[in-house]
Image (cartoon, rainbow, N blue to C red; front, side, top):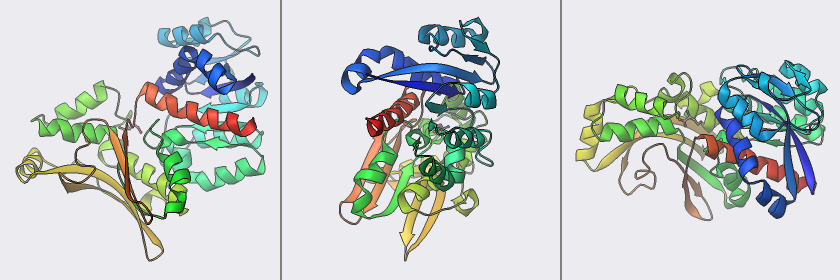
Length: 343
Ligand code: HSE
């Protein structure tokens, strides 16, 4: 049995979702994969910071997070900054799940760089650092002989990047089109049932799909970040956010949605990348899809992606794109991949 020592930065829904899976499935993880995950350090802007060299009590950690304060946890060290934690704690893998900033990637980008530079693995669901500097982080990880995992940055635990990067890599991916944002798909689906845009957005916020500032969702920035990540990972092309021709859903009216229904079509916010004559173009825009299109029937917060390949034609993957357990699962798959590579 191997023990993996985790330091978690950001202990909101996603970090807690991962820990809940680790608690619930510890016997399965030990039996099936021969690994025990031990959280030794947690730092959260709101909840505080704790470290225990022997490992923190996982159940107590979840309870303390629910109560809103980690200071009540038994620990050896309280109040370390993230930088202190990353330099002083005895851990092997950083779980970086602090808030996302798609403009600068910070502070997450610096945390991940610090951990990789110190020879620690890093896993993240944070879109900012991967959209802005995937190639730099990958080079740093390689130089330090460690790994970086980022599966949850696109479609949460639905294994989109693993499928595209590994199993479809030799099939010749020419085009990718996806419903990559749960909030906007939820809003469009609700508007089809007669809800107003404002009511539907409030519903998405109440259910926790929307980003803290929903502008990122409804104006297409979140989808654009995912498109940039897909370009880097699947096409090997470095794009910036401003290279993506981006449009959100705020210009769509209830009337547009109704007229589409009358025509037997549906509006979907589609993130797309396509290789044409060796150049990759990327866009995010509402598209009017006929019902027979593989993405037209995907409703609510569900995400979906169609890979158009030379050898297989279209391959479509449908699954959750957000959520506490779903995104926590993405981190688990990254952690298990790191564990298998070490075994
Ligand atoms: N706000 C995002 C969404 C969360 O609605 O899909 C997952 O990236």
